[in-house]
View 1 (cartoon, rainbow, N blue to C red):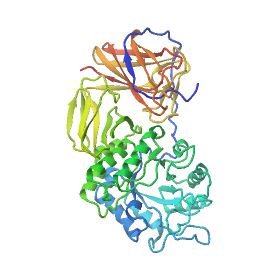
View 2: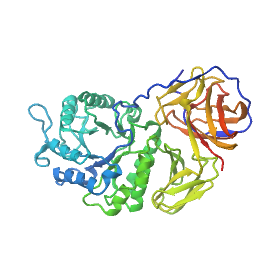
View 3: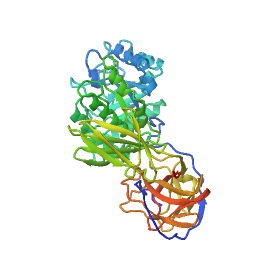
View 4: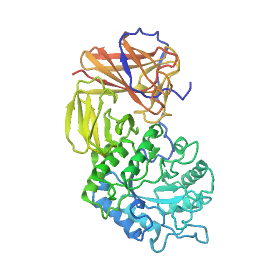
Length: 537
């Protein structure tokens, strides 16, 4: 049974179809859920923290006192409480030569007490400490660079671990033409051999290959840069978003696309543009690494960086990167499925003029309900809609909604169901809920069956979360309690890790009901993650 099977798409409910003869069924025994991606157990949600580069680069104020003050501010101003935990330092922390033993040496002027003392201070605040080097002979600093990690991987990894480093940003300068995947894998292995949990950030800029870093990065790093360096202006920021948003299939718990750190608060954009920046990074499940000098930023900057509702979108445990539903003339609609079934919807205006941007509950995979609640995550205003999702959005602004179904719903995980022979419960594509997803054989008659409880008789919305990486629909017949209840066409979603929702409606009796999807084509049932059952109004 092939593993490259069944993506996620928006399921379409059609009426009338005959039931297909069932093949032998069995109940799955669930295996233990394995680690995904790089198996270090880290970065199960996108890392949140700070990096000094955008604010200070190699300036004189980049030093021990500055780093300690950032840790103090994390605690005093609520950033730690908001979820930020990594205090990371970038290039220029070292002396320009290794010592006689080949070890890196902290710059005596910037860090007179050494790096371990700084890491210890950060740890004393209940935070974590990150460091920088490059997968080359020297780092990226334009004045000649500092010693890099190429051919010193294990020695440097051991030193970093002894200092208490929790996060390593590994840059790509002066790489001597050595294959990127080889260089970054060597440091991955060196870090693993230290025995210390260290988040591994691949800063390769998405420039080498094919294969590109997002194609090989999942088992190598916890995150990888998808773009070159960001700058503090609208054009640079939105360009990074446009490049990164096409890569959703590669992101998930433990392995994230990284469009570079945040510029929020550095002064080159308006407050509306910074809110767009923060909104898009959250919808794209991007790392949230503050790049401004927190000793100097405004209260408004803190209010953006500490928006709990937006952070909750970024940190959603399901770990699916949002995707673009529509883009026309600079009016862009993003949608991201959240763990509880809600959607984060960003209506983003890339033009300079106010525009109305619209989508619908059906388009985002939430059709079938009588009404929905929209919460604006910036204004905090809430309103009810029967399905329309729309806003007048100023130029360079973004309206970010959390969309919830009104009424009650119940989730049924596909792996808890009954299946046709040959079906497996798999974990090899990220973004699934629960303990895995059901993967049937590619054959007509394959099925997945779930028992659902209806509080009362009525017509219910059945929201199937699925993936279908093939180029064609995977049509199924829908039966309820043994009677034909229509059909569901599961369109291709583009990748096995891109999950979408298909909505069907069916009459249920009060109490227990059996709901079965049976493949009417040779592709089998798509990979099925869960069914959300919505009670009628």
